[in-house]
Length: 427
Ligand SMILES: [Zn+2]
Image 1 (cartoon, rainbow, N blue to C red):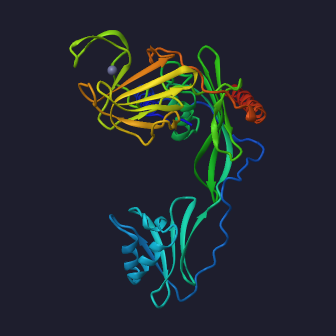
Image 2: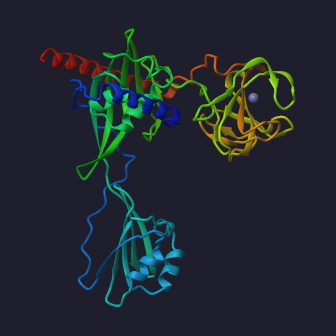
């Protein structure tokens, strides 16, 4: 899945700003949230709950140590009065890096016996994961304890009031889910220009809990946004058999993602557009510019705009460090003037969004920029104007599963709208 792009962040940020400027005193819209009676989700991918923990023997001493700036496990063991050789022993056991890669503010619970021998370390890494070291017969052992995450499916609906972000907030959505929603529809909806007050949106998504405490949102399962001309945009999640996200598709099983990203860099500053003819500042003559230049600091990541295979990765006098990617449907993309390449080698397959290199000024370049070309059947096309093909539809083997899920979700989304109307009528 494509990550929320900085572009989206910037756009939303702008929207928030505009929203606050003009409408900060507006009351929120009527909305409702309730838990839906959905079938139990397959949570088998989550680790089982930890077994109960026995309390420690009476003669153990507990040292609670907060890791200071530049702190380390070595320092923590020292302050618990444990002899130096122990760290060496820990370093030799599998997964020792889990305990040695500490961060400022982390808290370790260290138990020692009355001979100052290390008996146990408990290191809560985050809400759900704890690393634990135990003293065993022949040394130490580290285990990873995962708490069970409970997932509740909830739904929310609202209407666009002034900005998508504030309307989402008013409907009780977290920033993360608003971002995810904007990202899912980023190919279809221009969240700044296309949405109008009164446009309804509905979301069914996951909320995660550990021990009954809300720890954050999970994935969006389904969503629907209607734009001002009454055009319904819907999205349904498709997962594989391990419940890993494959992507989002509409009711017609069409992928919401396009085969290509519009831009290969996040912070878009186009310094030179596609032109049949232009004056070349280095060669000092008139030449066609059959690509788009993106200005940006040296080292800015460059993303592969589509899935494909690297067919050339090397040096050219004019292009400097350059990568050619061949995609399905006779498309080729070219990325030139890189300061350095990413980790992908020649003939390797890359996914849309993978970082293939970094902005530079190698070859004939006046300053750091990415020169990007888009070719179809070897002919240059303006990448800012071309209508991109869709990424593949729901794969055949998931078709039945998708239809079942999207039908169920559609019904839930429809129900949501009826209730929203009712709620409004009562006001
Ligand atoms: Zn160029």
